[in-house]
Amino acid sequence: MPAETPLNRGRVLLAVPAYNEALTLGGVIEQLRSAQLDVDVLVVNDGSRDATEVVATAHGVLLLNHLCNLGYGRATQTAIRFAERAGYDVLVTYDADGQHRPEDVRALLDAFGAMGCDLLIGSRFMPGAPGFNAPWSRRLGMRLFSRVVWIATGARIHDTSSGLRVIRRSVFNLLTRRLFVDFHAEAIVYLLGCGYAVKEHPITVEERRHGTSMYGVSSVVKYPLKTLLLVIIGLLEARMVRRKVDDTA
Amino acid sequence: MTLHSTVLVEIGLLVLIAWVIHLVRRDRLYSGYGALLIVTFGGAALIILVPGLLRMVTALMGALLPASALMMLAVFLILVMLVYILSQITLLSNRISLLTQELALRQVTSRRRDGT
Image (cartoon, rainbow over all chains, first blue to last red; front, side, top):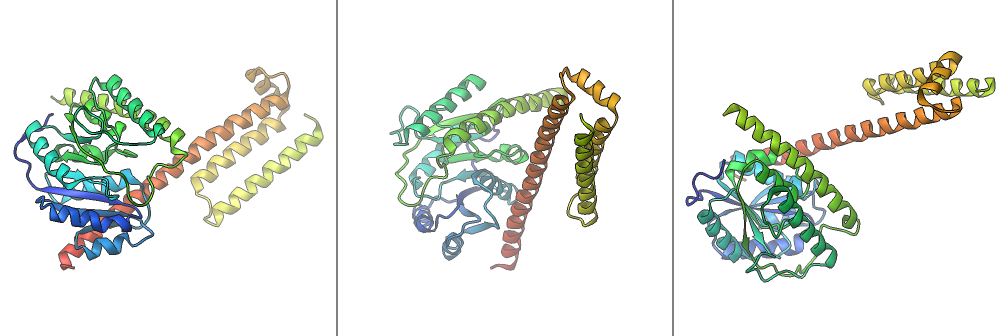
């Protein structure tokens, strides 16, 4: 099931899921525009209570409005559904908090074309990446889930929670069929388990300038438990998907 | 169980059944949940009312006293209902999410069609 046309990347949609990011969103869109990436930019306004919608409209980008806040995973899923229906070949997910750099998108798209994988993760921690100054609890969680993915699939993914990813059309349908709460380790394990290719490419991530992370204090306990459960379920479901594919072949 | 406690519990269960019927009639409780609750409360009322049944349940559960057996049964039923209710909430939440996503997708499609 790996990607068929590695060098022809086709139409690209860059999706920015945004929740109360009015302070940074304008700058992010401007940066993306000035980088002339040859991509369509879509903002998924996930029920923001600030002026996120106004900012996105003022900048003339494609805008999808969730009437209420559904969370990061659902916002990403809406972007995937849009990309699938509008006939895009590749989807790039990009954070609205200004932590990502447009030049990394260009490098990721080039690497994506050359590598021929189905999901390419912009990695902050793989060898060659400058690293990222996260709180100890998050660093511990990231290491833990990198290990979990390794044990579950045998693949070495250093950064399971990066928001900068390139997704090929071949997995759009698979990623909208189930709910992936954060599109992190659970989605990676599921795709790898189904036989798709997931790889990493180093990126640089800047410090957040405004707002707060979507992970609060309660996430320290909730996130690992929730993700671990979803990883196990994802692994089991991937086996069933593969068995069905083998049976029909 | 003493006659006093049996009467009290039976009255309590009958009040609960009446409340459930009232809620279903007013469309404030889904009839499926209503049926489930009435069967549960009715079953409990029957076990308490028929002495032979209560002794059998106590022996089946390995409890020393009928009150302990009833307590164990009640806790188990509450846990089953808790899981069921949480699963129904999740189902509703998923439906709301799907509707919200679909609405967002349809709005952008109509905006593009209108050229706005």
